[in-house]
Amino acid sequence: MNNKAPDDLITIAGRFTTSGVVIAVQPFGSGNINDTFLVTLDPGEERHFILQRLNTRVFSHPELVMQNMRTASEHIYARLLNVPLGESRRWEVPRVLLRRDGQDHWIDAKGSFWRAISFIEAAETLDIIQNGTHAEEVGFALGMFHRLVSDLPPETLSDTLEGFHITPRYLSHYDDVLGRNRLGRSPETAYCIQFIERRKAWAHVLEEAKAQGHLCIRTIHGDPKINNVMIDTATRRAVGMVDLDTVKPGLVHYDIGDCLRSACNPLGEEVEYWEMVRFEPDLCRAILLGYLPQARSFLVAADYEYLFEAVGLIAFELGLRFFTDYLEGDVYFKARREGHNLLRALVQFRLAESIESQEIAIRAIIRESR
Ligand code: GN1
Ligand code: MG
Image 1 (cartoon, rainbow, N blue to C red):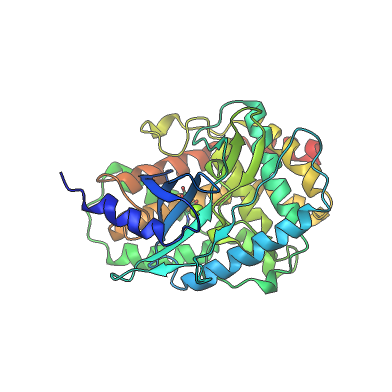
Image 2: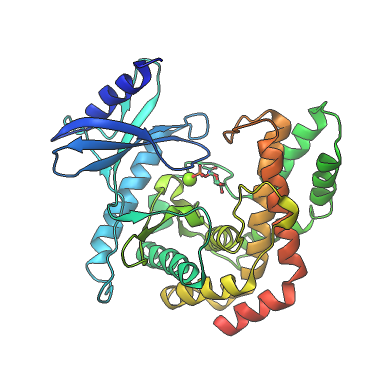
């Protein structure tokens, strides 16, 4: 058995402690990009914190990611003082933990970029939607987050991931990769290629609306999928949104689409039987019931007109990103086995199909929820 890795992690975690001794560092969560660990301290002012090795292949300017996180969380803290939460609800924001010398990260001998973030105690995240109440809480969490950053001017944040959620950019990258690809065509890859081909023109819908001035840039979360919403283990209410790496300027539609595509898929995005994946409209209704009371103060009429397109588009876009990565040899999303990113793509395409086939019902839900 090799004991070296845990020892190394304990030393690295120790670089971020101000009190207490690190007694354990364990892999944590199911992220596709960064490496995440839960650190346990004894005794320490706080029992746990999150240690992460940022994927600098994806985030090529990690110091700007840290700056955005700090700008957003400080803004949210200040704003929380004026936003009534109601009884029996807490709202927590992950804080960047500084080292004793005031630095917000540490670069190890191999050049890895490490950072520490506060842990929200007595709460958990779930990869799969549990029921309508859970869906409503997921919607509330995104609405609360958007409301708290709605007065944070997007220009104060850096664009840390150029092209993120710009579907036409993913399409042109896909075309390049496909052109170079020499893999044989299985029935699954043929299905994906045809699926993308038929939706190429439509995939510009949000970017065109943005270019024509129908939709405006705001501060967004960037990755508000179901398992980035922390749920209180006792009250089962949402207590915060984690993973602030992608907080940056963008369309709220990317966020709403990502939240709905991830939380209205009762089988989750890592399912084996991709043909069985479907989008559940009742969960969509529950999410909007939680989201819109928070968001009505800043959404304008044109925003509602593109909500339906946003749901299908973000599912399609994620499928496109997974499929391109499969063709490219898994250079972006961590793949845990051969064909993993192909399977993930099939799940998202099946979900996008299910959204398309229920267009009338989903549009009616959006209309009635306004
Ligand atoms: C990635 O690593 P994780 O799980 O936080 C990705 C998201 C995808 C998500 C799909 C920076 O997020 O855009 O929606 O996987 N993050 C980045 O599960 O690309
Ligand atoms: Mg993320």
